[in-house]
Each structure stands twice: as C-alpha cells, then as structure tokens.
Image (cartoon, rainbow, N blue to C red):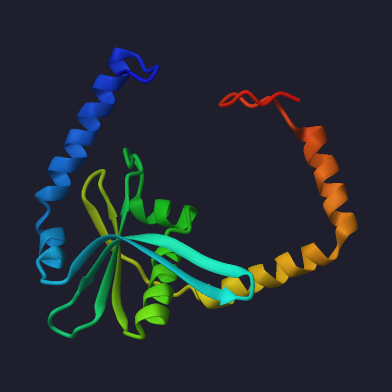
Length: 178
C-alpha cells in the first residue's frame, strides 16, 4: 500500500532506507561494539523519579563491554545528513541529552556503571561518542518543580487554556474542528 504517497516518493524512500541499512550492517566500527555476548535491543525502562513523576523510554541498544564489564549505550538517529555536519546536528537537537538520560536510567535501575555513550547516524554511517555531560537527574528535578508550581496556580491554567483555545486551528490529521 502507498499510504497516500506518490510512487516516486516511495521509490526514493525505499532506496534511502536500503542504503542506510546496507551502510549500517557493514560498518566495522559498529560491528565491533555489537560483537559481544550481552546485547539488548529496544530496551524499555520505567522508574519513579518522584511522587507522581515517572521516567520512561526505550534504549535502542544496550551492550556490555567485555573488557571492563561496563555498559555501552547506542542510540540510532536517522536524520538526513546531506551536506550537514553530524556534530552540529547533535548540538542543535540536544542529542547528547538522550543517551545521558539512558545512562541515568541504566545506572539507577541496574546499579551498574555505564561507560560509553554513542550516537549512530544511519545516514552516512556516522558513529559519534557522546560526552554525556548533561545531568538528567537535575533536569528532571527542575521539570518536576516547574510542574508543581504550575499545578499550584489555577489562574494560570485558565489563562493558558483560554490562549490555547484562541490559538487552536483545525487539525489536519484528525477530525477535530473548532
């Protein structure tokens, strides 16, 4: 089925997906990381950060480094990098934060150390070590505080909902209409 896409568009998308897959499965750097006994794909996690606040997600790849026993986290990105610097794309999209959050989750849940964090851009086979300097625990704490402050101010809710209603447009993806 075409799902409403033109044949030419589907052909381009299929070719791009095939190219990304071929490049990824033949990338020797990536294969060395994944050549381990303990490798897990699409690892879901969930833990309570504070009362009423859960942290959940899915880690693309979680593997152990057989040399030191530490975990390695690998996050796939399928951005179109044509004529773009992958390092700049990482910074512009805060991609370092995601593996840092995964590291926080793994260390919190397993009580084991995560050693290396990687971002892998499937377009062009760009494997980049993430610095993981972000502190997800601090970021989440700030978010919980902001939510609690927002919840405590009912007048702000009414103001925001009124503004949303004024700014609302008909949804192009479903049957919602104002």
